[in-house]
Length: 339
Image (cartoon, rainbow, N blue to C red; front, side, top):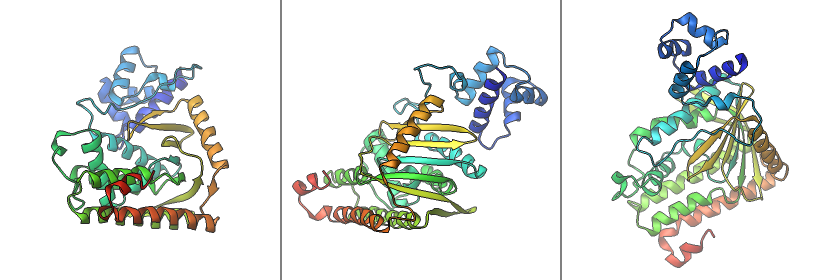
């Protein structure tokens, strides 16, 4: 029981962010600081009322840290279509997890990229704004976006700072990314849909998104060549090791595995940009085996494979060039451009 309680406390500490966890716990349970530390260490066991308070406050499940063997796997998720859902809260939780990993210097992330990873696209303002606009108008159907068109020059103030923080901290974590030839296609089709529906404010907005896609590819190619990624932010530079793979097998979903302090968090995407998260050991082990199988059948593009790396990025850039011409080609051609 002591080990389970310590694991639960460790998870809650991560959820508490920058706050002093012991003080936060003492305030929550109405106990003194020494009593809070005893519960954190597991020398004083939690009672059922305390456990209930902790799980609700930190939004964790006690099941998640119990090492029982079962076909049932506990997941965490945020329902998009409930009144309390807000993209900023969703992004804040991602930012807190990444910041904790980057600050520790011990974490590592593996991504299977069916679509452009958030961590990548948020570093490019016009592309980031387009994705945030698309999610709110075309996925969440938010009323305030009903009659709006996408203007790349228009800031989305409530999200931009947190999006840039996510981008910055990601570059401080060692990572591996598995891309496929279809990885950019979801974004291309989203842009294509907005062109055909007249949802770009002006042609310049389309061109700025295309410019950002080119810039993203240029940066990604340099990082694949050197085996390192880096980004500048208000607090200096973040840098980490980087491996990139090209998979010729269709990637059926975006899967993210984050490892820190001997714990593996597995995120599986659903509903466009949402995800289920678990650190169930059996599920994470199965997912890791799947990822390793993908790697073994993929081409390593980082530091080696100069020819394949060049060909991969050339094909991506050709698609971006097609995207630039969308406003000047017929609708019939547009429909089949990326099929």
